[in-house]
Structure formats: structure tokens, C-alpha cells
Length: 248
Length: 312
Image 1 (cartoon, rainbow over the protein chains, first blue to last red):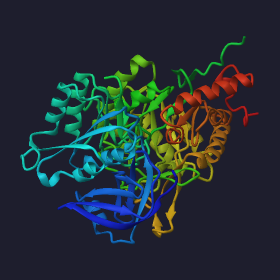
Image 2 (cartoon, each protein chain N blue to C red):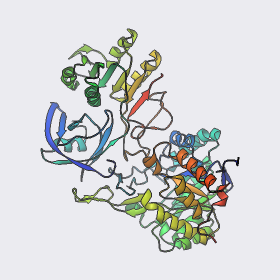
Image 3 (tube, rainbow over the protein chains, first blue to last red):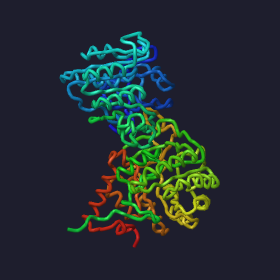
């Protein structure tokens, strides 16, 4: 549905770490993995969120500001207003997927892993964060049968180092057919340049300051300096959030 | 076999490959976005309006599709004229090789500021400067829009005209006035080379479950399908009242819509919300549909359509 907002009622809120909740709502949303919604709390504001689960509709919400803080205060039975699904998600991906999630970038990747489950797709997921505390959803990926690799900057869980280190190793060993990543801008830029230099097809889910969420206001342009393969004037909400480069 | 109908026009002496103009406020926030829209088939592109100083605009929600149109209150987000002039210079460089002219758009709170903003951006040499005296979403900061009466509208026009040298100006009018033809006549008397009609129509969308307006600004401007009949009537009134060319804007989503706008008296046709309704290829689709309509109905050039439905 494209018109107005649909309300969902919160069913449960599960704490994943000190500032992150997994929020499950009372109905499904018909969406492709990688699409997003604008969530509105009247009187508080409206922000974009990746869809973390479709059936039931679920969001992973990190407390980063007044809006996400207010979402965290929501009690079961209370409503959130949702515009969407919006944008374009991940597309068909072959039989071997290499997923890379930086911090809360893991959320849409879990939706993708769930969508390809039972389709004989071999999924490897590499999750990275500063510390063990920031690694999210690793058990959920494991439960889906994905191979999980963990990286932390301080070495408190998994291997010590940036997630891009693991990506480069996998690329050098020619283990990667298709790279799919979501996470902070710097991480995505680094992955884009790795994929471009190894000529491996990739899909990156970009984050940007979104206002209208409908492709008109121009706020969420992702510049070519972040990934030289992006076309000029690429809008995260309208053309993305997933940018697909099949022939790097 | 007859040749394809010719979509090219000349607007205030500016050659355009087709009559479709990216409307101000949509996607025009950077040189790269303007280039993108030019590559996507625009006859000309208009940058987002800029004012004397930077404005963040309104908090979210700023836009909603309410079923028969869109409602928006972005709130004239812009970097201020001094920054904008660099953006426009970059746009000129990016667009020159494509042969797509670019238009600037300006707003301000007083006649003097309008003249100052115009003088600051004129050196970027836009092909035309649109004078936005009709934004419905900044009443708290700027009061009643200048477009609301002929005296204030013509005073701003005169001030801008005196500050831009030879660059043609188009004054953008509001639909919610009792006699738009009279306002058009006043701004043309004051030196306007063209009219853009119309800006969005003030409106409100309430979410009954939230028991409050959807937009943080409470009210916004209606665009999309609901605006089209309002815009057609305004363009027709203006075409009867003045002899300058008109950029007819409001709810054009298809080639037939564009033809209607030209038949109401417009020479060029503004396109904005169509990107939401028809996707990134909206301009190409509209141009192709326009050409198909013309071929099927025996029109060989856009000029044959101008005012055909209303000027007798």
C-alpha cells in the first residue's frame, strides 16, 4: 500500500544489547528484503528503518536519538504508524551469497537470509563491530543455517580487525560469487572498492539522511565519491536503498 | 510516412528539446541530481528554491501520498544564496554538454531580499530565474505569500527584474487566489518575462488514529493528480490575461496531462510529483506519450497545441 500510514501494534520488544531492541509487531508486511519503511510516532517524528522481518513485521531499533528512544519506550499494544514498504531491495543472487553486516547493518541481511532459506543458497555472513557488544543477530543467522564469521575491532569476540579484512581474504581466495553488504558508509565504500578491484558483483544497502522517503526532496543523495559506480544523483530512498552492481 | 511530431520549443528565447521542465523543489538540490534529471529526458531543469540564508526546513513527516495526490511541507530547505551560486555554477558546467538549460529559483521574505538573492545568483548565469512568491509552507517565517495580491507580487517582480540584468524571469504564482489573471497581468506589467503556474495548493491531511495532521507543519501543499484541474483552470485564466509564455505545472503525470496543460495555454510544462507516480523514467514516458498523442491527432508541433482548448 502506498497511501498514507498503516498502523501496527507492538507485540514484543526484545533487548539485544544495551541500546538495541528487536521489535515485533502484530501483522505481516509484504516487502522484499532490503526495502525500508518510514516509521512515524505522532508528536515525536518520523525516521527510516530497514525492514528486519516481514512476517511478522519486525524492526531492529538502536537507540541513537529522540525518535528511536521513543520507539524503545513503546509498550505492547501501542501503535506505530508505518509508510511503506519503500525503495528497492536486494535482487536475485545466485547460489552463493557472501553477506557482510556492520553493526546494526545486520538487520536487512537477516531478512534476506530468511527469504532465501530452503532455496539451496549457500550463505556466508560476516558480522563486524567495534566490540562483542555491538555484534548483532549472529545466533539468528546461525539458526538459519548460515556460516557465520565474527570480527571485532578490539578482538573481544571473533577475530580482531575490521570486517573488510575478512572480506578481502575471502576475495583473495576467490570464495566470493556475490557480495551483499549493509553497514556504515565507510565500510560500504571500502567494500565497493574491494568488489570493484576484484570484479565481484555486489549489492550495497546505503544509509542516508531521508526526509520525504519518496524520491522527491533530494535529501538522501549518495555521492559518487562513496562508490564511483553509482550513477549521478543516486537517491537512497528512490533508487535504493540497495545499489546493485552486477558487472563491476 | 509522416515525420514524428516535433516536441522542441523556444521559451523566452531559450531553445528546449521538449516542453518538460523539472519543477522547482523536486530533486533539484545538487548539480548531480540536476544532471541526472537532464539525462532522464528533461527539456529544462529548475533548481530547488534558494533564499538569503540557509534553512533546514521542517521536521518529518514532510510528505505523504493521501490517495489522490501528495501533500508536502519540506519548508524551503536550502543552503542560502552564497552556497547556491556555487551549486548553480556546477550545474551549468554539468548541463552545458547535454544541451539542457537550467533555471534557478529564488525566494525571500522582503522585496529587498529578493533583489539581493537575485543579484547573488545571477552571476551563475541560469537561463531563467524563477521567482517563487508562492510557497504555501513558510507562513510562520515569511507571512502571507507575495503571490496573494497584485501589489506585492508586482513589487517583488520589479525588484528582481532590476537585479538580474538580461536574464529572463518567470514569476511563480499561487493557485489559491480569487483572480489569478489579474495577478499575472500585474507581474507582467512589472517586467516578468514568463509565468510559472501553479505552486502547490494549501491543504491538510489528518490521520484519524493519530488525531492530528500528518505533516509536522500541520498544513502543506497539494500536488499530483488532485492539483491538475486547479492548475489547468489557472493556466487558462493567465493565458487569457497576458501574452507571455507560461510554464504550466500541477499534476502532470502523463503525456495526455502535458497536452492538456499546453492546450490550457502553457508553452512549457512543469513535472514534479510524476517521479513518485511513474518512477525515474517519468520524463521520457511523458515525452513519448505526448509525441504519440500528437501523431495520432495530427499535430506536428507543440505550438499547434498552445491554448487550443481555451483561446478562441
